[in-house]
Image (cartoon, rainbow, N blue to C red; front, side, top):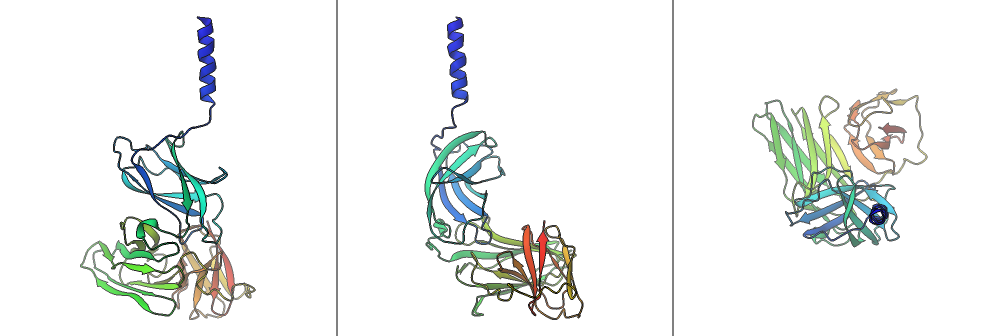
Length: 334
């Protein structure tokens, strides 16, 4: 009897310390794997589960390179996977600025990373959205959506999207009925990866608004870019700069710029995400163009002329506030 107990105990410890082994995930397919067009630290997974007997409770996708080194994980956000599902993996290190495809392994862990369910050997093409059919480095089909709160008065919303040659891709004006909440959406359009776009947004009486670019070929719940503006923090009339994967918007003058802290100040600095940042100019030159650039030198927003404040970006990191006369100041978003 003792011999069998000893054998059972040994077997238990052997199996307990074996490395996790994946199995098949029937009905679960990966339909898209791509690098975020605006954040090189995020990889997106679009999957579909047609097996409703298994929802893969509390899922987390992990991505590994071809040598088995972990590159990033997903924070658990869902109870399970049912039908179509969109997931975001945060990379340990930002993806290099190159479109070259590489082999990767995609693992699905469940139960808050307690068990490995299955893995997929894939070719990661960073700049391709497989379900759109536009190909590697092809254009991105999107619809532009604006929603917000207008305090019951109704609101007039204006949108204008221009490419780098100032061609108008979208010019829309909407007037909503008196209502607390409003929601408007454009027709589908396809954004090139090799253009610098500017998106002008205005809303005359809104308290706040959210403007987003959502998928235009699959489902509008799949968002590629979103920004929320609060009228109590800054003007809702704002120009955003959109540069898919970077390298197309001119940020000349940032390097070696004259940092004259006695002339222009920004405060508070550091500042929390989405809080108000104030600009003080010793020469009262607020009629000069002011741009907000990320750490890579990509312009992400243009501050309206005459504005003395703006809303901090939602994504933490180092930014630069650059004035038309080449004065650039660092701004840290926490």
